[in-house]
Image (cartoon, rainbow, N blue to C red; front, side, top):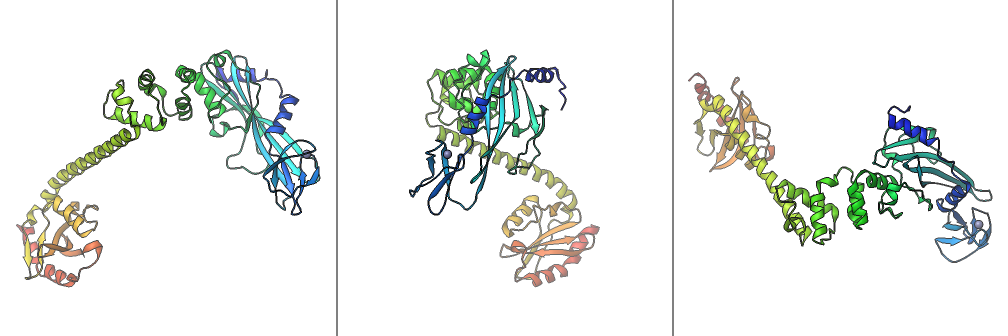
Length: 422
Ligand SMILES: [Zn+2]
């Protein structure tokens, strides 16, 4: 990709001034990044695939050091004779006022009886300006292709951001060159399980990051560097209250979650009473419960509002049928007269007559058949055709009175029809 912005052009120019990786650096990478193999046979002969020295050792082990070349080896007891390892090295350097992170792909093919074949290539450069602004130069890597072969190709060019450029290197080269802004930031070559890019971009983009690092608040630092969607500014007032009160935030993610909950309920985020809880988990859980109840209440109110609105429509269309009821002595059938009744009928018989809004269909009349006040089946009648569309009991099954109910309703259709002309 051709550089478009002034910033990108500046980086492309600066990148031309980066020195080539030195022999010392690359040899260090080969030795420290790659997992070297000691191949062990069933007869306990170990072959170092780095120098092909072989010796016998019957003790069981996972790692050892080659007595000949001093390489640390991982013991592999397998019939496999070729091995491939590829890793990443990160070199932290400075260039033209930028903090630069250079990532090298390091590969080694090992085969018993042959010299190991090493390969390296610089694949990604992250350029971070002193104000945290950044750009990436990288080779292309086809998505979804993570084969055991070399898979970075093309030239190093400015690239749009992709998460795959946020590399977790196997090793970071010990000698680092830092821009002055990083030198005075409290950075001590520690990464707190962050990728180098997450660390440096957070450190340079936000002065609060520096404050956290200098105060030794590494949990907070790590949390906000990693969770880039959380803005530290949203929590800063409360963080400062914690500092001032000597309050140790044990679980940062839970604490931030808790602060969000306090914010939701309009609590004072400058008040130590709230932001420095003695039992964080208990307070957190209390507010989680409170929020659930809040939403539950909201949902109920919504449903109630909807039911009231529905009731108006329902009355307009169906009130002329209200009051209809008939019986054969055992089964009582009557028209359902409110949205609430329909809802209750759905709950009692565990069917979807309410949730599917049958009561709002202009052509549907709903009746309930019951025995001694116990609902048996719900009947849906087509008003225009005056015929039964469905008649269903518990969980959409027929009750043992199904036929009797159908007969009873059928006989009384004229009663319903009468209301049409009224
Ligand atoms: Zn060796």
